[in-house]
Image (cartoon, rainbow, N blue to C red; front, side, top):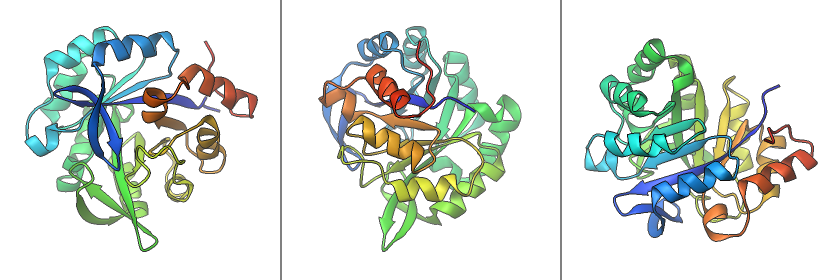
Length: 252
């Protein structure tokens, strides 16, 4: 059985790390490099860095910055934002990323996931899915949660896995930044229809929320940001809590 991962999410804009509520990431919280160094010391399982401006600005990821960040990151490092072709994936992996998260571009051309998985391995390709609950159905949104793609989450999750994605980063837009708990029903709908690991994201406010995402939702990993930025809770304490409550985690 795979150990459950506790993963901080770093939302990156030109001003540094930011956080808000419902994808309205307006509040500046930290510079990137010091945050990465702190998380290294706090024994996280992985780090996710998302450039939330790149797609809407239609620009490449900043490979030089990713290279600088990766030199300080001693855990698996997933990078997303603005990825729309194979050359960008290649450059990010060369810059030190271990995985890439693809969202908007996959809706335009699902073959990007297939080609990426064929060239670099499915373990490098993470399908990022952002959802909103509309009248009881979970709609997939692109462009930083602003464009309804017309796909329901179960349909799209199966589609990206069939295309070759080795993992899904699943985020509830409404729960993002609220610290009121993950959307367990959303997580359950996806974990019940795919065989790849699902990273739950959006809403963590305490360690019990993380346990619920794993034990009730079936998530393989729990991603969070606000809980670490705005409270005294830590990834190490999260892992200790999960272990004490019957969840298999890796404690260093």
